[in-house]
Length: 102
Image 1: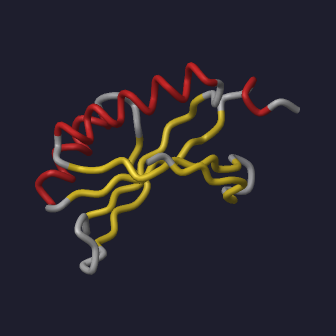
Image 2: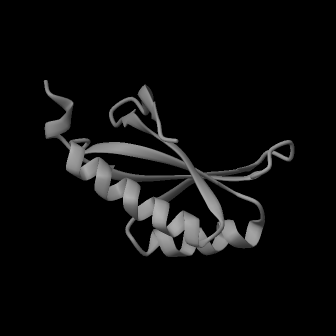
């Protein structure tokens, strides 16, 4: 099967310097039909307030460009960084591949 033909669950990882920026980003991204998956704090990082969000999407070139542009715009407006995204297998909730975005 060609994976780009189907909508898949995509996990997106973002990080922020403080809790307020993470919370503001989360409110804005949820308004764009993303779901919060996890929030962790890694004190050793310059951007310690991490957030994983998900949304079903196709992974063709246009869809990837669209969701990358949207998340990057909102994360930048909230002083954060968009670390990477990965495909999640919907049936088993098992990671099947990781694609990092710089």
